[in-house]
Amino acid sequence: MEPILSVKELGKIAKEASYKLKKLNTEEKNRMLASIKKSLLSESKNILRANELDIKRGRENNMPDGLIDRLLLNDARIEAMAKSIEDVIDFKDPVGKVLSMEKNYAGLLIGKKTVPMGVIAIIYESRPNVTLDASILSLKASSAIILRGGKESINSNIAIADAIRLGIKNSGYDENFVQIVKDTSRESSKELMQLKGYVDLLLPRGSASLINSVVENAKVPVIETGVGNCHIYVDDGADIEKAVKIIENAKTQRIGVCNAMESLVLNENLPDKFFDMLNEVVEKYNIKVHADEKSISKFKNAEAATEDDFGREYLDYEFSVKTVSNVDEAIQHITKYSTGHSEAILTKSYERAMKFLEEVDSACVYVNASTRFTDGGEFGKGAELGISTQKLHARGPVGLEELVSYKYIVFGHGEFRR
Image (cartoon, rainbow, N blue to C red; front, side, top):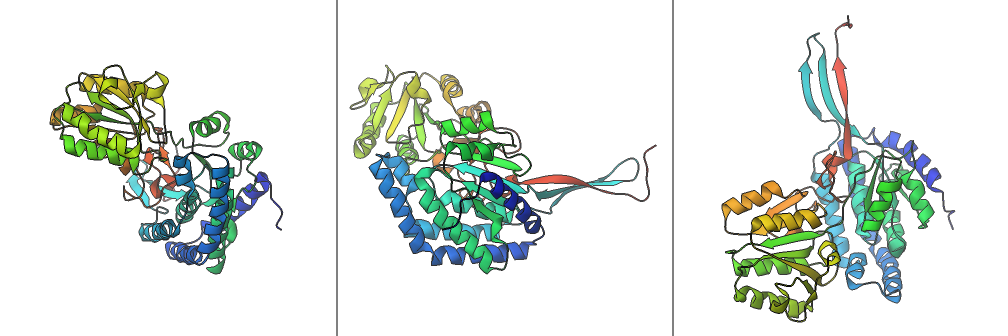
């Protein structure tokens, strides 16, 4: 049995490997990714066996269905993971782009060029597919990666990381481009957050408590990926049939994801037909509704919403309901309780749609569409490392373009400053 290396030792190894990785050209990186795809598929039985152990333990610990769904791997999801590798191969290399080139007053040509981050670290929970997504994006962006998943998915994460490392090795490159922290204690997580000198960028992906812990304790640069209390506002005069279908999709397609609808905001003038149709969805999925005073009588088996209910990310068959008299009140409610992830307005009014787009300050704002589209793949970015709800450097789906830095390159002809 291999010894479990300390986080600092993994950081040193990743840093050394990063110097080799940044020398690879696009063709070499794509060849490595193709080898990882082959290895992932050849090792799928081992990965699924490891996942069964995690699922079994999750059920024994009474893990909610939404989190079990996040954790679950099957043949179809392995195939989807393999397809995401193909997508990343097809994307343009984000490294080495000259973003600008201008001549200054002294005759110097001053350019701006994209460069690798160096070592990227990610701390995440539940979702083993993140192990692959984070690795292939970092590799394409010419950065080494340190993976630190949660204890609930540790067997799956190790099996996937082993397959990735095998694919790298089989392609003739250094498997140390990808490192995984096997110690799932809080101490290892905190040590990774504070690994100055080795980690160039850290992303947390998971619960509010995880994200808050990283933001409060990190001593390395962080992209804050946020919790998703996503809102849908149904305006009066909205297409009722389309609205109910969008709500059903946003709430029920996958309940344990950050872009699922958690809060429904309803105009007070919506007709009874809308509630009849929405109640069919509520009954179909046995959804628990936390309704305000004005709407509670219109839902079957609803309970009175508390202040806390409006701000919750349920990750389950539950949502809150707030009744408003106009789009301004809807925006006011969303502004108060939003986590800055994704919000949508369902309306036929161009003016109200434009007002909503302009005044709602979230990473992704929709008109007449489901919040479930907030995803790197759906946005044409391939895989993603998370949804950034901050405003510095990256916002929204964090894909390849957000995983590089830049430097200035300056060409002279013997000039000196006077």
